[in-house]
Image (tube, rainbow, N blue to C red):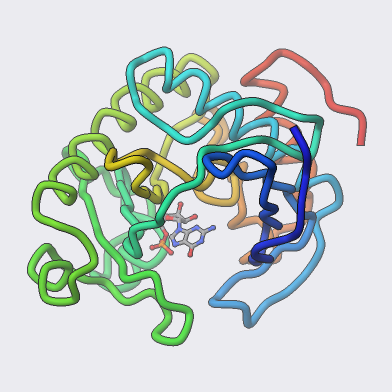
Length: 239
Ligand code: 5GP
């Protein structure tokens, strides 16, 4: 497969066209941003780790019957995915209160929610990804009610699979963000699943093993991402 011109450069990834119109070539960057781009930095090796970690999760989810965009790894930093028409909604699943929900509702971080809470946000940098509901999605014509139902059901299925899987790695899946898109009429899970898009807490020490280390200046960001990779695969990555 041939890597052709760059179509899009996002905060964490570059996306290239390929000689197959159904497939895209994604390159993961070391750039890190938070708070809607207000905080910027570099996490050495993040692109490699997120590419490999995300590929690992997507392969596992495909085996469990979760339709997704992942096709194959090209190298440590690059992967091929199916081209999606991205639905402009972030689907967030929460098991414990943390981050924006803890702040907005005055809850202590780590409070058990007694079952998953699904939030939707409108993907808009300009507006700062505001929280929306099913009716807003309809009013904004972001997705059909059937697509919303598919996204919700898939997000909850992913939660069951990943929560159990991470438990076996001594990691609590606190919350995460998913994105979906349409490929040949089918809703597929897209984007990435990585320490950039999930909150992972060590179940023994409650140490944060995710992007909150960068957001909150906790240090040892690379080490945390490497630790997640090590626990998932049993392998080391040389950066
Ligand atoms: P919160 O609503 O607390 O900011 O985020 C909830 C979860 O979704 C966290 O795991 C966070 O990493 C993820 N998340 C929400 N919005 C974004 C986003 O715009 N970018 C990334 N990388 N993750 C997000």
